[in-house]
Image 1 (cartoon, rainbow, N blue to C red):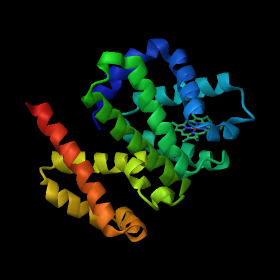
Image 2 (image 1 turned 135 degrees about the horizontal axis):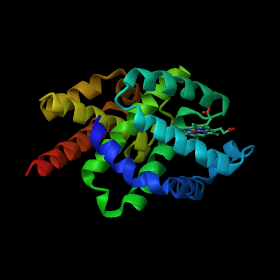
Image 3 (image 1 turned 180 degrees about the vertical axis):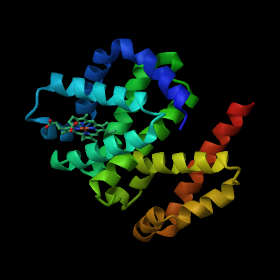
Image 4 (image 1 turned 90 degrees about the vertical axis):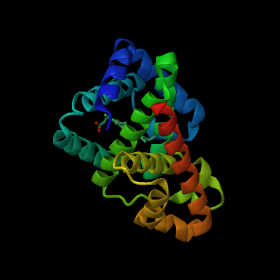
Length: 214
Ligand code: HEM
């Protein structure tokens, strides 16, 4: 995880934190009105504060991963009680990134985007682990995989990790195809489709890393 980038960019958001949280929910409900009923019993201003607080807590503890793990596991477990299921996480991830982009403007570079994409994927992994709810790839039938943010996030995060470890992109594709998560997807949508999508994302990530080295 690129802790420095996460810390630095969050510092830029922090002075406008409350406004940021407001925009986040506005964007979320506009794009995904179907999640609104989950929040029906609550005062949205309170929720905005909680979102901000949880972001602050996460960012402040990026160097304290054990604590972060415990905190996020229990947060994930509580989300089960709020009727949040794994399929909702990509929505929130997408809107979070979008809202970051909106607030960071020109400072929302490819590198920053990658850092937050990776961080969100890691956070969700820990939360879902806490919820002990097996992540079910629901929207995998048809070609929806292509637009499924969470799967892309997962492929991107793993690819970056492998590239950092000096693994060649063809081997990365093979490794991902063997990953139990993507094997399950392969069984649902067909190995060929899964292979194409994984190769596509791996290529994009590796090209963008190559470009950033120039
Ligand atoms: C990184 C991901 C997320 C973080 C850090 C996060 C953070 C939080 C926090 C701090 C609370 C306050 C209550 C508590 O601490 O238990 C909360 C409550 C809640 N969150 Fe999330 N959340 C995340 C993802 C989601 C997703 C994907 C949804 C679904 C769209 C969601 C919906 C809710 C709901 C419905 C509540 C309960 C409100 C209530 O009844 O009090 N959250 N979240």
